Image 1 (cartoon, rainbow, N blue to C red):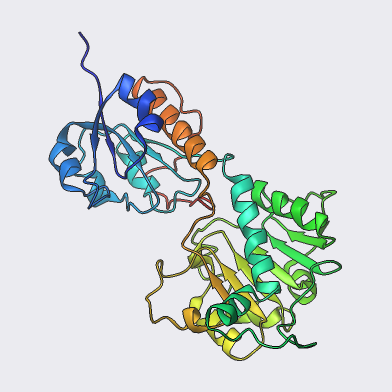
Image 2: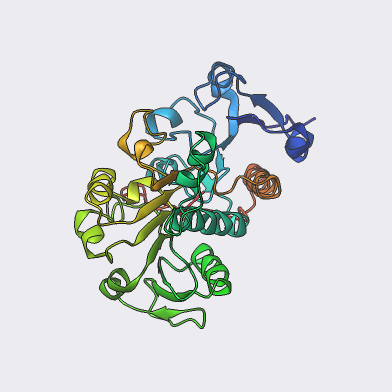
Length: 332
């Protein structure tokens, strides 16, 4: 009988989601109280592990890969893969898979949620109720931003950006977008970045994290934004220079920010962003719906099983030559 390959799963997943994997492979699970690629049960089995089902919390770099001499497939439960050293994988003959496409709607829904929460000042409103400050109705109390007729600027116009555009159009917003490919789209008007930042009442980020985009939304970028504009980020935290964002909010140049991703992540409990009434921060939950996470698990397992059987991965990450730097993926 042919030995079944051993796969390590770095975080806790429902048994039902893992059933296709369990039927085909032996599985070593992380310690529930200490998840991660360096969880003790996984490290103990590392010399025999051929497949790795990881998450964006796992840093899969050269030193980690050296612990897994038989590893053939890394499959991440995310669209983004900036946590994986692709060059190191390529040098070791390890294929890499991710889970694109299935989290588009969930992430777009959250981007709109953050936009609405900032525009209508929901954190301030709910705090006033909880703290017993709900008093007399005032004509000028908690005045926010009405989205109808406002301009939404989408920085990045892939699947998620376009899904946000469809939702925002239903709210009566005008759509501007920038993207690398010089093609137009009926969902909005393609413009250059300066035009977008100067005119958008809300700027929503939908770009991958790479060496080029790390810290890209810096002080100069924020200064070009329309006074009072809102910033929404459901992409990657490190795309934004956090200190510059704090400065722009403190100065009153920006009207608010809705952030599902931050840098660092998680934010320290005493971080200034968490004390700002016009900032909404959620803990990287863009894909956090039951349906989406189940589909992500299925795609990740399909990638693993294909790679372990020598077939092309359904959703493979393009690996660079071993001597080149990795290009990193989008939101997850």
